Image (cartoon, rainbow, N blue to C red; front, side, top):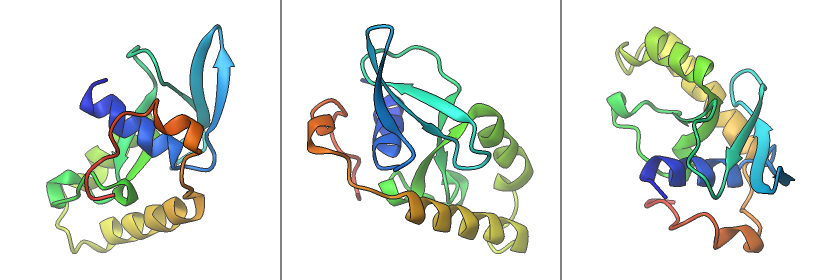
Length: 129
């Protein structure tokens, strides 16, 4: 499993909106975009293209890390939109700060430890988590 897929799987597994479903013989975590609430699917066994992306709440550009608390699942449209609108702003920009705080709060409200049965399927837990 690639690093990006592993981060995406862990972000989904620690988000209480995601549930494990069996779709067309595949195990899929189905939940909601952290921004818009759009339904998203994250496959555990296959590296197929997906509308689900890893969202760094504090952008990597501003020293955001891959710690699970800084990761969320976003649809590609929302993640790209946030990046274009906000990631190039200064870290102390009030608009960027407000978005980061909103996403941190939302992530905290959705947080859960993944069920034991899933953990062997997710790969190594990301560092700093």
